[in-house]
Length: 99
Image 1 (spheres, rainbow, N blue to C red):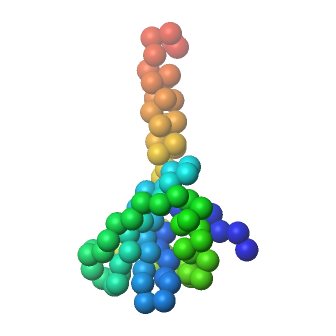
Image 2 (cartoon, one colour):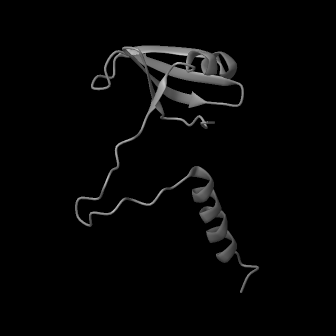
Image 3 (cartoon, rainbow, N blue to C red):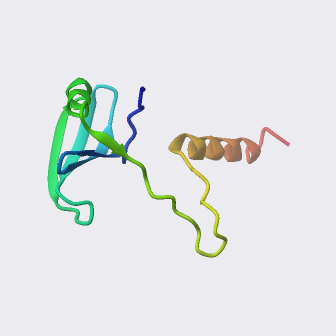
């Protein structure tokens, strides 16, 4: 089963938790934690290849489903690409060339 690495993912390997802090094409910055409750841990930067080797025996933890306390529904997923596209559309519609 192939798993796609994403920023913010938390993996458990033995007694250690590994959270992906920054994910780039060839490099991964991750934080090694003893407990998920605390923010204390050590940051590491390594190649994506070495990081995948590190995760061979690790287990991906699923994020808790967050809900809006007022409506009981999940908030919409927003990405940077979506926000940039929305800004571009707004600029096009507010352009003096389009009337």
